Image 1 (tube, helix red, strand yellow):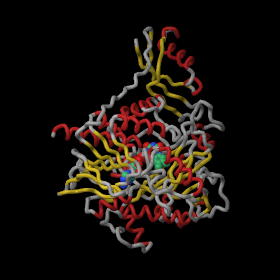
Image 2: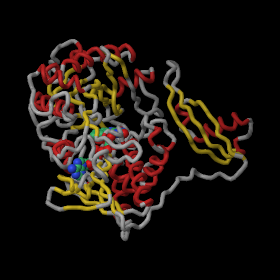
Image 3: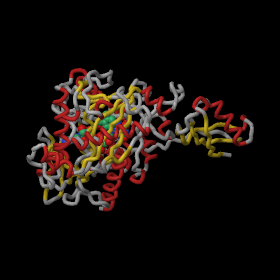
Amino acid sequence: MQKEIILKLKPAEAFDNSAIRGYLAKSLGSSKNSITGFYKLKQSIDARSRQQVWINLTLKTFINEPFHQREIERISFKNVTHSNKKIIIVGAGPAGLFAALSFLEHGIQPIILERGKDVRSRRRDLATLNKDGIINPESNYCFGEGGAGTYSDGKLYTRSSKRGDINRILNLFVQFGAEEKILYEAHPHIGTNKLPHIITAMREIIIDCGGKFLFEKKVTDFIIENDELKGVKTFDGNSFFADAVILATGHSARDIFELLHQKNILIEAKPFALGVRVEHPQTLIDSIQYHCAFRDENLPPSSYSLVEQVNERGVFSFCMCPGGIIAPAATQPNELVVNGWSPSKRNNPFANSGMVVTVELKDAVEYFKKEKLKTKNTEIDSPLTLMNFQKIIEQKSFNAGGGKFVAPTQRMVDFSNNKFSSSLPECSYLPGIISSDLKNVLPSFIHKSLQEGFKIFGKKMNGYFSNDALVVATESRTSSPVRIPRNAITLEHPQIKNLYPCGEGAGYAGGIVSAAMDGERVANIITQKIKTL
Ligand SMILES: Cc1cc2nc3c(=O)[nH]c(=O)nc-3n(C[C@H](O)[C@H](O)[C@H](O)COP(=O)(O)OP(=O)(O)OC[C@H]3O[C@@H](n4cnc5c(N)ncnc54)[C@H](O)[C@@H]3O)c2cc1C
């Protein structure tokens, strides 16, 4: 017999198989020996009680019958070397990679054009950025093999469960080397140290099956005849032709947005969010969330998720990284962007999280007017106004830091009380931080919303509003400030045939899993279309 059994255990018990077996036997009213084996279907932490943190487990239990390990669904890929159908995928982020894998399943040849380098060469560019404050605009935390997903935190949860099959995406990650626990944890996480191996394994399969994977191939133009996309041109003068083009260039490919606009291809401004990254000592967050002086060794470093309406504007935490590092995630030499990641063990002494405020098109237009920064593409009717707003704040942040990606920073209570921080504690951000009045960097509607937001969050999480916490500017690449429209059913651009906007940059995803699901979705639609032709 097999049964799904739910247990609520103390942390030490939840990771001790012998203890679990005992509780299973008790719950079944049978002996320990009758249980031939079990595996976890779900695991979550419940830290609501001040007395005890609980681990909730759902266990597939085998009773008096042979035990079978969890079956990992393995997807098989076809050899596409001789496929007469070819699809260009611009961008090798999660959207592009999962689209490519889906084409391999269906026997269609993907041709991936990626502006950045492979994961290994990319790592060297990241080291130079972190150590020397020098950025390679084509190879950084956003650009290169695996896109923004490779050196990301690798949290694999999404709220967009209706947009695709999350379990299929997680299974594929396991097939390419991720740990099985991502299949049952409530908040699955891979970690920056493990992602590059997984992305490399995906590339190897794509190439082994006859797909093409070309690095340092920045797409700089579209080949369009009678409103039909025939192919693309790359920066080195080469042209590539295919049956369709998936544009999965991510939220940081401003040159692509500019190119589309310049060619009168329809794009739209899209509201996004901008703010700062906040860093606390991890021990402080643990003590708040787990209600104890020291974290139980069986519990992971704790996280939080905060959201509040302040002056009718959303203020919320974003991409929280327990035991993490703040990373320089800009793509240009004169712009400062911060984001966060953590290794699989999440064993750094800091907890960081984006804390951002929603930005509408009218806010950006107001800002430009107030700052007397009226230039091209800063008007209410320009699709690039929000992108230019994002860029201006990033440049202000870079200048406030004094260059080399040193980040302007303030202590949290000082930030909220308009006080300059005369000293700053240690911070995980490697290029360095400098004390700065962030009122001079952030637009006032964002600054004020954050000032208020921090105080409110301090009431929700006693201890969060602290001068031991740092506020680091600027977290600005939360999602795309531009949408590339597409037909809701055919997923094709409404004006240009064979152009398929995809992933986060086009405005259809926000994170690794949703971008991967969107890549699969677009690939499936193109496959159906090709097969019915
Ligand atoms: C530091 C960091 C931490 C993050 N942590 C998480 C996390 O924990 N969980 C999560 O879900 N999300 C996280 N994210 C966000 C996540 O990485 C993105 O949402 C996701 O990668 C978007 O996927 P995408 O394929 O749509 O675009 P991207 O990953 O941005 O990929 C786009 C690709 O297109 C390429 N490209 C751009 N322009 C061109 C061109 N002209 N020609 C050719 N190629 C081009 C780029 O080089 C890039 O490789 C993090 C991001 C960062 C930077």
